[in-house]
Length: 253
Image: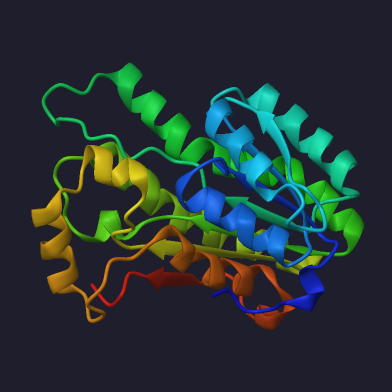
């Protein structure tokens, strides 16, 4: 269960990739804390289902906007709309990503660029768009989602691994730049989280058992396991923490 963070109540929170998986768990968690949440996702059906699920269960029903985060103009417009709807933005959670597998020998420049646009580029431009609103509000917190994948020597996703490593560098650079504005920037590195997409595409019973065997905690990780760490890094409970990475992997590393 996520902890209680009273300072998040009524605050504007923007989550990218919030329609399913880890992102949906984050939207539920922030909304349950009384935050005013907006989330962006390209998957319309799942996103609208999430909003319907939360209707009548939270004080502030989350706002959803369909956005292709590869379209930076659309992303910028969505940030401005969210700031208006929420009365400002105190928290940005850069969560959206796709861990598609790809082969070293067949990757072409256009695929590489597309992969970085999906997994890294929008982190920067979402932060760029949100920062003026955080400055206006006197500060804020940015939580970037990376992954332990780039630490595991996984040969089947070099573009994704490069992007997730890049998010760590981006996190530390933004923390250095934005600290004087009372804006904190941290990163979360999830481990083997069993979302529906992962189970459908990549993780079978054997892979699941192998991953759990490598963990100190002998259970599957689920999307909700990422909510508590994210709430902590977004809240005043972590007021002196910035430029840091938090691995949430059940003790695999």
